[in-house]
Length: 123
Image 1 (tube, rainbow, N blue to C red):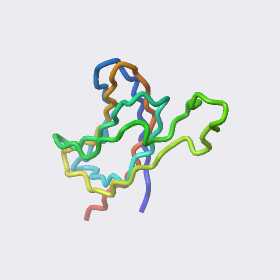
Image 2: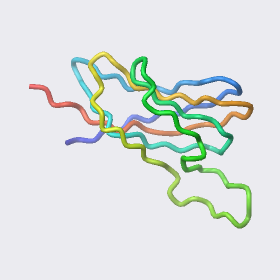
Image 3: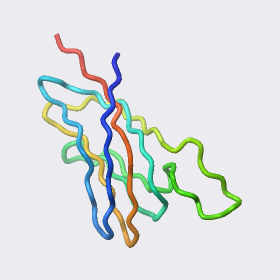
């Protein structure tokens, strides 16, 4: 099984949802989403949403993810991981897309990530 990666970046906007690049499963290249690598630039009680077609398959508060930012105190160390892996292991139906969105409240942050997927073998 060959793993592939497609990166995305989302620059958040105050009181809005902003979408990153999508991952589309086509008849020519059907895909299985293995997971998503993701990190946020800070904790502001924003929500990361993952959608497949018209169905939201994940809604995750930013505080559950790793951040590349300093946490704000001298007694808290910088993270050495810098990213979170969210496991999905789901086949994307042909013609559907996976897309990640960042829903910000009063304070915008950014998201960096990558879809981890594998092409489905067709015969």
